[in-house]
Length: 504
Picture 1 (cartoon, one colour):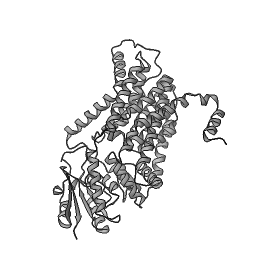
Picture 2 (cartoon, one colour):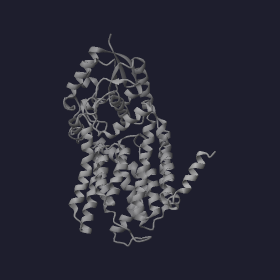
Picture 3 (tube, helix red, strand yellow):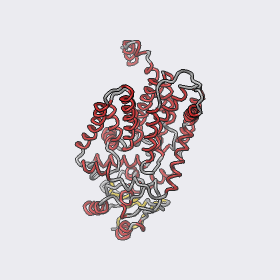
Picture 4 (cartoon, rainbow, N blue to C red):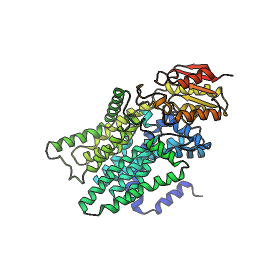
């Protein structure tokens, strides 16, 4: 009786020779292995970042009948919360391994698309190098930013696809890809700039009419967003939370020195991780602006102006809101990889040192991820265990802080739709100054909604004060201070986290 292996071998033999021995059948398996190896550390921790905790808690609320942008809120588009909810429905909500697996697939798809772009511009070797170098660079930040299954990771495939479709003059598909990118995270829409740039260049060089192509782009962009608005039962809420309601959150204010330090620090980390690409790129630019002939290994094929526009638009996207979190910098990686690959491909620089450095840097970041300290997670887990022990699944909990993963780890329902104190105080981890933080800076009508939820559902059984030294400590927020003093008693202290229980 033939085994599965024999059947697969027989099926493979029936494929055309060009498929069995083709470029992609050799490159894709290697990229798949590399994607898995570089992101194996993601499975070593139950949760890597507050964003993962927020998404996991949000998905549970949606699965329990919550309504997105009404009884379940966030300042992000809906695609990733829906993906989390779907995974929890199929695999259960006790682990994030399905999301981590999908994140690896997202990285692989991004790598394949980058390989396709590079191959079309500079040949087969450049294509394979672009895919591999992206995967090596994709872990070149803090492990909390690169190993988590968060918005930027799932945004990248659509972002690169939009560029690829525009490069092929498939304008409708490019618009749809930009929309999917924007519906994963708002800043993904920045890829519209290089798409429009390519349309402008195409119409200028080829003398074609640009208006029909522009109409296709905007139709493709608007259609998915309109469909999402129709699917949502609260389209006005979608508009508020995703577009119009984040002005204060995304404004310049607070500790500007800290913001500058975070921007420079994460830029330096990414620069170090991608130095194997940045140096050839810098060398090539230096030769160009010195008006010296390039030591070309062959004639340059095509301009890289569209890649520079893409990189510039990504820099602007990373800077929006002045938070400069490390995971924002993932958006810079695709255009940076292509520019670096193009510089190597069109000069006398050899591939070997580029690949050796990039592999060594990725190995260092991989080891860092495996050895990443877990004190914060251990403490959060300890608090979550204590909360679970003092409550029942029917009880609600209020976490006064910026670590919503506590809800998910404790497997307890939030007492409010506002999963972090940031919605009620305008606090953000990226801007830790006390300026513009407090009750009066909350999201519009947030405190009225908060009070109504507690009145309708009853006071939470447990309140976890996880504010530490932050400028929204209970004594700085009168409503929270009064709530704790009137209705709660302290039952546990875990370093700077205090647990309160409802008085009987």
